[in-house]
Length: 462
Image 1 (cartoon, rainbow, N blue to C red):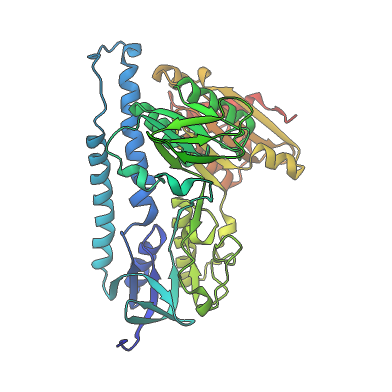
Image 2 (image 1 turned 90 degrees about the horizontal axis):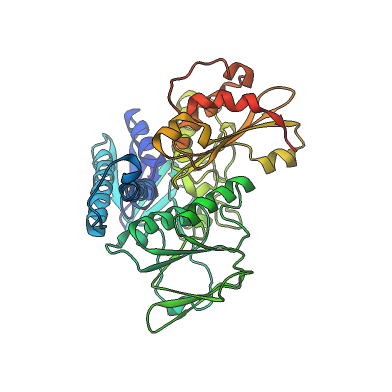
């Protein structure tokens, strides 16, 4: 028999990056809060996104540096090997501590009740978890997303991995085939190549990470190939079939063999939001054609009692944008701050080695906008910090508007780029002209100190 509805000031569904912080803020303000989590606390980032992948990237980087030790005058025993069980155990411990910390945090909130189970709307302000119906004055959805499994011919005949199950491996694949040459796929490709796998990346487009500027993509291709990763580009008609040992994948490419044999298959072709089984219709909440919850600039849905934060709203799909979603909603609730998700600048990183730090407009976006722009570029081989570290792949590139002198965007590909890009990000938020940015004294030797020097090379964007 269904229990009587339990009433709350707020219901927070999901405990990714935005949900827990919001629940804590509401609870601290004296609200009666319900927190619902159907699986592991911490969401994608903590359990199968940033935290575990970057832990494994760190292990792969250690293996890579060890192989290059002689370049630095360090002589090691030649019998280097990878203990994937220890790699996995290290990653698992970091994840366990992070996820457990979020769970304890939620359990310890005053005037908050934690419910475990799948949440589904049964009315405009009612959510059911198991046999319990919860009624909330305000409801906040932080339900995240999951890997997309494409409708690929033959996929039902072979085992495959996603970014989630990939991290369950405690052995090194003999030959890993990655379908998808974008951010997730390339991080895993380089990681497992450094662990010792033969790696092939199948990408339908003419180059990897196609949303980036062409020179960025080509440079990434160069350093991946230099590590022995096989790139099969223009793979238009991808199909798989089971073989006596492993599988084979059909690749209709302009170059290379028509089939590639592998032992492990990783699908890295995108993500979908976890919105298909929430009963959104019962709450009058609309989604777009891809399933993302439609929100206004303040992240409120078509139901004024419900907000959508994080990956499920399609307005960022990053941990940092999810956290910013929390800040926007909380500040608007408590301070009537008028904050909007459209106020933030696009910024993200690709965690290959070297990493890519991106902020603002890309070169293609600048060209399409019709803005009159200048571009400055400097190879990492002319950055002292990179030379000293022996990591000189990549370059620094910054775009500015000619008339206003505002910084339009940057693509920094090189050692430390994921950190040094924040210098430009802060300047862009402060709306200072690049000529003022150049006057700021920076520490030597760093990558950031060369950003003003890049701006000395400005030339019209052809």
